[in-house]
Amino acid sequence: MERKIRIIIVDDSEQTRENIHAIFGYEESIEIIGEGQNGLEAVALARELRPDVILMDINMPEMDGIKATQTITEEGFDGSVIIMSIQGEKEYIKKAMSAGARDYVIKPFGVNELIEGIRRVYQLDQAKKKKIANPISGAKLQSKVISVFSTKGGVGKTTVATNLAVAIATTSKKKVALLDLDLQFGDVAISLNLYVKNTITELVKDLINVEHENDMIEEYMLTHYSGVKVLAAPTKPENAEYVNSEHIKKIIGILKSRFEYIIIDTAQGFDDTVITALDDSDTILYVSTLDLPSIKNTKNGLEVMKTLNYSSEKVRVVVNKSNESFGIKHLDFKAALNVDLWAIIPDDLASVAISVNNGHPLVSHRRSSVVSKRIFKLAQTIVQGEKPKQNIFKIG
Ligand SMILES: Nc1ncnc2c1ncn2[C@@H]1O[C@H](COP(=O)(O)OP(=O)(O)OP(=O)(O)O)[C@@H](O)[C@H]1O
Ligand SMILES: [Mg+2]
Image (cartoon, rainbow, N blue to C red; front, side):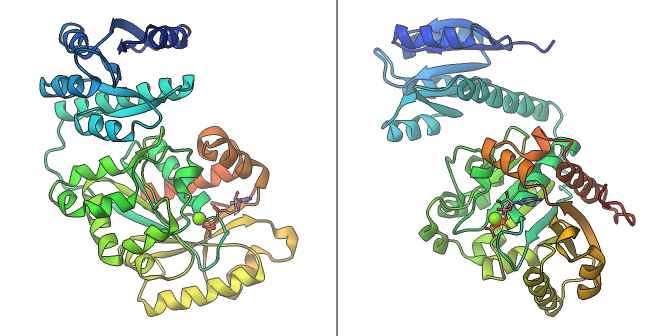
């Protein structure tokens, strides 16, 4: 069995400490090894017990949680501090995060939220320690950039992009970034049920610094439990206008220095930022559906891609929501567009809708659905860098 995650709780409210005890009563992977009532005690406990995770309140007598976090961090603590805060302490949370806290939870928190938060920071810490022990000897990453594109809305770009990213991360154990370039209406974070702390808006504000210190980009990304790191779209549509193609070029460059796979979900059609991403992509997955308007759009879009000098190796057509019983067959589609179909993903609203509404990607919670299988196959093809054999995606 894996070793338990050792935590300490620091809060002046006995009630809160008791609640946390109750939460972890049935949680076998976590062990409470100490408790404190103020920041001074937190510092002493951190030195003495070297826990993996410290759950730290903000407002406490003697020394507050921010000062304690700062002291503990400065002393070289190699675990993580998670701040427990109440609604309305946003400014303090920011301070605590810059003092070195890794995450925060808002009281009253749910059981899963807390447990997942602890596991997440713990796993990241373990990964970090491993990396320090086995540094990648300055080797440059071989990154692949894959954009998921279409000239039509609602064809499944986000579904494909999110599930593909999760599929690659879970099967290849490589570092995967997912960039939401649907700047106005991006819904990657919501589809993956991620709490949005930062978005591309905040990153763009700090881009000059991040360009100097590339690994800082991860501070602006959200971590999905699959390991995928998401750079979310702005939370307000009007903030989209602060992000331009120059920014996108730089951001993709930085991501390439940190991640092996960069999956980009796009807004429909060719706007400047999307074209920048497409230019920088190794592969474009052009998503279409088996209906006339979509076929017409795809035909036009592929023409545009030719004028942009994208090779047919680079642009790969993916048919999503495929159901031949509505009149158009795959062969008709191939003939009309004169392209090979790289993947065919069946129409399965029940599975896709349930997965989105539950906030769990289909490829992690319904692995046996045909949609998942096709996406795993797509992931495998991308990771192995091979052309799919004929019929590889044939339904059935
Ligand atoms: N294979 C599928 N089978 C059935 N329904 C699907 C499938 N893929 C996606 N959908 C559904 O189609 C709708 C649109 O999907 P999605 O949001 O992924 O498309 P999109 O191209 O990103 O849309 P937008 O242009 O709005 O960004 C969603 O309701 C989704 O659940
Ligand atoms: Mg979308």
